[in-house]
Image 1 (cartoon, rainbow, N blue to C red):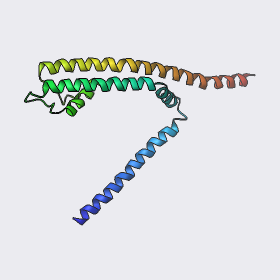
Image 2 (cartoon, helix red, strand yellow):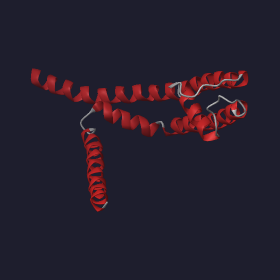
Image 3 (cartoon, one colour):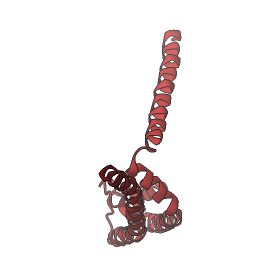
Length: 162
């Protein structure tokens, strides 16, 4: 018994080291971002798109709460339904609205299927609007970064000719 407890403590320590190493890898990516035009443009885009990202989050959260509650109330009395709680329905709604669709939870009743169709259509609409704005800002950022990178190269080439 004592050996098993000691082994578990050592295992937890090893897992802590693995987690720290993962964190160091992420930090290294951020350090390398200084040299990558794409990563710098991505970071700048995320900063500029804070309003769109918060709008996306609020719309998704509102839809998840609305549709998960609705599907739970339609499906709760069905004997073969897997929607046994609102959190389980929230999981289904997140997967449906983000268009992942695992298929582990499926509505059985007609009302549940109508809610599922509405949730998937609303998820597509909610994701499309802010993401298109974010992509537009990313295109602007990459264009600016490429102009900044190309301008010094052109001046060096001109100096070499003269």
